[in-house]
Image (cartoon, rainbow, N blue to C red; front, top):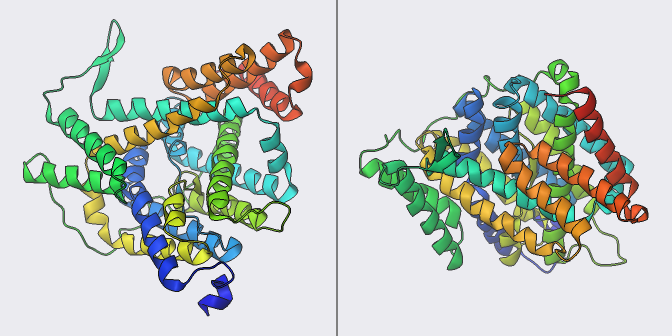
Length: 430
């Protein structure tokens, strides 16, 4: 049955290899079951329900990827988008988490339509490479400031806005130790380094009396507090136009870039030959809609899937194993609820550092490319808004290219996004 479903021999693999690859991918991305509830619960969402929604969304997304595309790529709520959801849309802009879920749903429907109609490919081709790299790096900086403030390594200051916290306190010390554990394990190529780091700090804090142990296994908590709680009509409020735009843009760049990168490494997109990229794009689009109904931020393809590909994963059986393991994770909710913020903060900070690598892809010798990229990267953390970072980047790119006589190199897609952001600032401020 597995051979018929996934064509294992055709892809030069077998069941054992695919299972090992699925386990490897799960270990490298399973930190999300601890981090996502920690981030989204800051909006007032029920932490246990978000935990269940995270596991179910990851399982469902990975299952769709396995059966529809037959690709070895795991899916789960995305880092960066969950931070935008919680810290920008809800905590900074003042919208409810129900409205934010509505915006995720609408963005997922738009994303699905863009994929089916081929507009998604047009957008990807039209956005400058420098801005794509800057968006990833900017989200990295945004995650970094969230991580540092969560761990109280960075704290507010009336004169300088931010300053160094008290590094003698347990929280910052645990976070610093966790970061070094994760970085060291990853440098030694230990699979699941991020997850191991989170668990070590959690257990150490319990042993030293700074955290309570609530157990490991139990029946899954109720999903009712977040299931179908999205407020679609509230998300159609005019102020949500740019929020939806940002969700769509980041989903387009992040998911497509990840899918292409991992697929190329697995040899799944040979040049001038048929491939299943279209089905993979469809899979990640539908997963966003499903995740919003369950009660979590946008679900996307995970770059950590490359670890499973490295272990030999070549088919959807790898993704199916990931889906089954996320379902099994539903039964460790007490452990997930025992993980403190200073244990997940190092994971956020480490992921942020990895995302900063995108800066090397920018042509810093060309001011008309480098300046918009720099603005995109810097404005995100300093305004505490991914949306404003995108806006500054796209608008400045169009202005500088036009001012330097390079208007012809600006793709219509870039013009469209820039104009939409200008309209947002002109007519829908705040």
